[in-house]
Image (cartoon, rainbow, N blue to C red; front, side, top):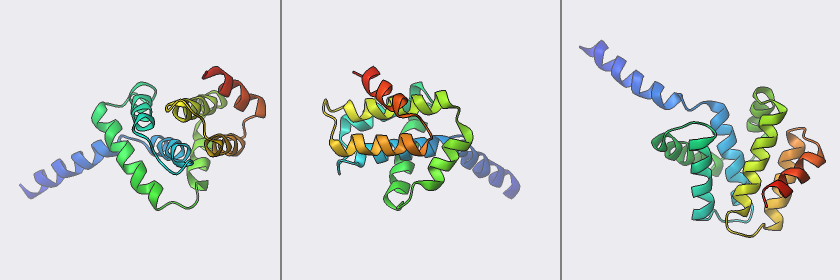
Length: 143
């Protein structure tokens, strides 16, 4: 009986684990963009949740969980290096460009791009080894 209960709880923990580390890394990067103007607006959070559901193919519950986990981790993070490295190691150039596109959409969610949001997206683009032209194209494409 005890082993059965352990399996159930282990299975429940594994369900949460199906939200991969790469998804968490993307969520933290997007939160960083959103928070770069020192506040995360509800419309930005809604845009992120929609991204998690559509582009990462997560359920609504997993999207909410991912957002909450990313916010917890983001509070205690002073360096994004490990998340950037994970994305660089796992994503193709096209996927990285798509992530920058999502970052621009989140920055535009409140109908204004703060200079700090733009700066943060530029830095993330550079850290993801994307060309400046990719940064500019995605900025224009999200209009």
